[in-house]
Picture 1 (cartoon, rainbow, N blue to C red):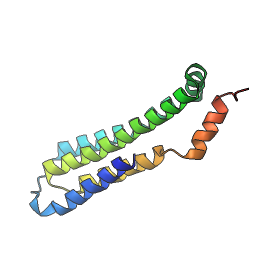
Picture 2 (tube, rainbow, N blue to C red; picture 1 turned 60 degrees about the horizontal axis):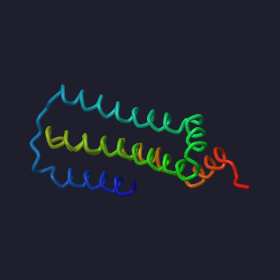
Picture 3 (tube, one colour; picture 1 turned 90 degrees about the vertical axis):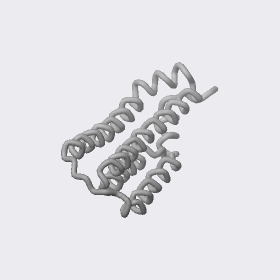
Picture 4 (cartoon, rainbow, N blue to C red; picture 1 turned 120 degrees about the vertical axis):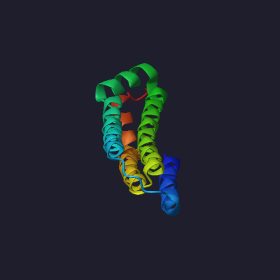
Length: 138
């Protein structure tokens, strides 16, 4: 997860350093499409996380797969949401390469980082969820 965050920052650095080599080309339809795509990925990442962390679903997973399956589900979902954020950043960077406007990378990375922060696992919340959905062993 931290690696994806670092990759987002590196893409911003590349866009900043490559600014003199880009040729500005206005493309309003692409601008509109990229904004919609980034918005859909952002909202999709939030919905994906909330769906995967639904209490009824986590309760079923804890009952069927036990503690290890429960923790694997939390980990896998967190990585999936982080990939949504990386997709947002990559979308912005590719648009920067096409249009020559480095602001796409900066905005994409900012929105991707917001999604990273939203999905970053906190130990206390995972422990609370683990204690809530699993029964103590006798």
